Image 1 (cartoon, helix red, strand yellow):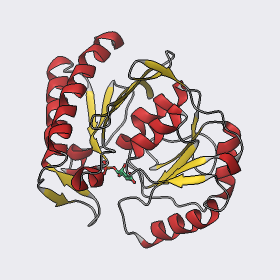
Image 2: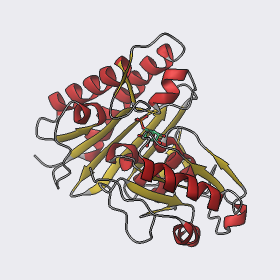
Image 3: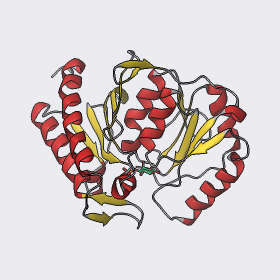
Image 4: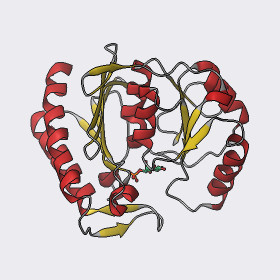
Length: 273
Ligand code: IPD
């Protein structure tokens, strides 16, 4: 069946908004928390419930579409991106934030087709920020067009830095070395605890760049479109094109800033998705 992106967008947006109510209603309540790949990689019943709602509704509506979901992958499903229309879903990005009641939590959903992102939506229901993008149509926050800052000067850049959800020694070493290198060189650093929101904030011009090793395709699939539609860039942290399955990305308000950061970074290459 021909892919009708308007139909896809109009179907997923209200579903995401409705699912966001679960996060908003539960963020300051007791949760059932389980650990996944490491003791700081968490999942709650809300992550699983939202992913179930989104995938079952989408599958009923679009039976020939494919899915990559954070919790389905954790439960053993294959994480494979082909040219087929594929919904890439992180039901709760910033699960650690959600567990602690720190309000920077979002749902991140993207639709990719022919291996490019067509729809990207990041919804942070507690703080009321809905980021949307369609390929070639710009990026929006709550319906208003947004643009990356165009900052090119590292010394004036506000940078997002994350410590990740693994205690892998090599990963931690690279993260700490990079913090030591970058902190004295930038205007300031912020650690928001959500990769998708970090990207959305760069799209908004609220930060100028951020990078991370060890993320997964569901953390960046929507953010990649939102950042590029806002005029920012998403590249590999060593420079050059980003590979969405590589578990590495760097996004910035300008190519010049991305180049400067990638020249400074100590690299780490996690196992691919
Ligand atoms: C995590 C968050 C966190 C980032 C991790 C991600 P999750 O996603 O985005 O900020 O540092 O790399 O895995 O587990 O909360 O969906």
